[in-house]
Length: 595
Ligand code: FHN
Image (cartoon, rainbow, N blue to C red; front, side, top):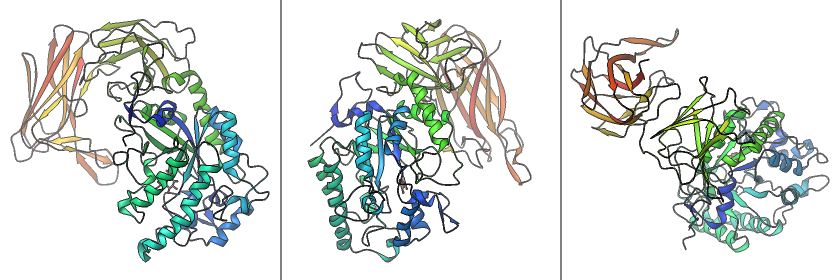
């Protein structure tokens, strides 16, 4: 049965969303909680730091080879009277998050609820007896958030026949593994799906496809059918071990840990992310992401139709690290003012990374207004904001933080909107400018945007076409050798630009020529105008001091200038030809108005 429905245009900016995932696509932002016995270890065991560079504190039992009996003694470090899951939910609410997903059972196999089918659970080992899932469920209900449950189905270090990575050496009998599945996984899933009212999602965590490990497709289908039978509206993520493409019953795709979206996807997807590095609490954590970074990640994902689930790793007394709490509250403050650009918003038709000032999101409101939100990460010093590629005139532009919606002056010219900004943004971190349109704004596809400070940087990112076979060489030596192409055969590239202010423009180009004389030709054509440049030797440079780190020099060379007689669209063509054994390497073309 195909479970993808077409959402009425304008309600959600995303085409293939199953009915039950509508809230998830709308809400965009949730909390992830990693909390369990490992929270008591805080990333150290008997004086030794976690034995693995990635410092995932919740892996301490496996990494430091801790026996179950000893691991269980960590319960003594918990302050059972202080732990209050409602505080986590309140924090989520303050952060503007709409759901909370907790590690009901992480890889250590320890259940955070009163599990009748397996006594390795918190109820049996806390004093007084606690059922954290029950308490969290009540708190979520009270504060109007959805509850998601993380359940490690594949890996379980407690059950002798559950998967742990040492079984890659010693192997495991399929029948024995199915024993674990039928006596622990299925009964526990049944408990979770029947004891705690509505479950928003079950979040599985098998980061391999089932074909690459011990779990069989039948076992996964068994879980999936159980969920559908007991909680038809509960979402299932792709780390169940089945992809969204392969099984339309899987509601959304989970990207890699901290992996942000790169492309717009038309089905629901999500990034699980950390504020720090570790998921579980780690005593010596020090890689805190800034609030701006976290907001940028959220906005970036929404601008590509994604969801963002941000983790907190509370301590064994339930406390959330100060560094996390402050960032979450700051995000919540930002969302109180700017939430409209996130909730119910999604991707706009222009590429998300088209402009150097920030990112865009879009929504069609219930009143029929089309809004594009311009998220500015860098307030321009000249107080001008340039938007390239929208070919319809906005009816109004204002700052989202401005309650009066005082209109901002702007200039509209075919495919360029230039907005006059006030001296300072009205809020912190990211300023949002709203452009309102009566109809869905039409765009000019494939336009290379003008940079906000002026000029056009033309390269492989914004080219409309590239003829000739070549490979783009990715940056190397820590980025000191930039992205480029080896010009080993003639190559033609084209860009579409819009010139707002007619006049003379310089053309510069960057390349590396390691020959002793000219080794090729670079030709630019705009209409009837041509610029021809014979490559010059560029020599070497040092990438890193005192490291014998000598690299090819990529240098900017002035080709000349061309006059753009009137405002309008122009096709810029570039032809690259090498003519010696030692081919040159080409990087970019730069256009800049001559003032
Ligand atoms: O191994 C886990 C890890 O501990 C953590 O739970 C993350 C969260 O996405 N998932 C696994 C690694 O991808």
